[in-house]
Image (cartoon, rainbow, N blue to C red; front, side, top):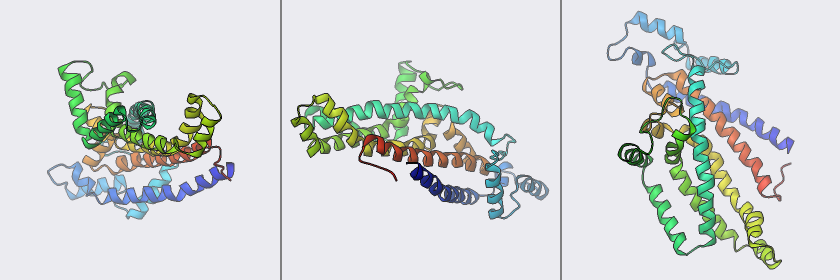
Length: 307
């Protein structure tokens, strides 16, 4: 196990550098960030030259990237064009989005897996048909429509929740935004769990466990569920980074100042340091989540061994 973890960590190094380099190049072709700072009126040449020198934009792209990565390993993600450190923006944005993501993942695990197990064990029955139709409807409706409808009904019309989240963003105010953020993923988890449960329920090891006279709940939890959760864990693990990076729409709807909000503002203002800094951290989240998922395989299925 130890050698496998070390090998995976070494494999992350080129992936990390490749992903950050790609993001850095993509952000640098968005346009001239200095021109965006001056608004509709063009910057005078002296001011533009001074700003480019101040932010290091007068150097070649490869040199900018090398300098940026060198600073990242010292904990310096640069300075936004408004003079604020990117690390300061991260310190306020990431805790909010992490709470939002935790709520979304909990919805996926509790509701998605539970519905998937119930429908998988009752395949073809009315409850299975109803859940399949509901999940298909959730997948078909764009997330911004779901968010706006829930905000209008629960927040404006019925007054059950606040229409927008307060700056502190406590857990109780993030329940509905978390449900909106995870709604599509929750539907996929339900359908994926259902299919996996239905397929494995006909496997030989399940029939053998039943023939031995094991209680039904033990057959489901100890044998059927553990083997059926491997593809579900894979999906949820990769969805952690996707939820954090894809929260732009949800955070805009509920006025949440998290990672999605800062990324949107950074793109809008062409703030290279902000966008690249936040995406760099999200790349690390994706890599760590995938490593954790791979290690969970051995926990769910004892037949899996890592050398």
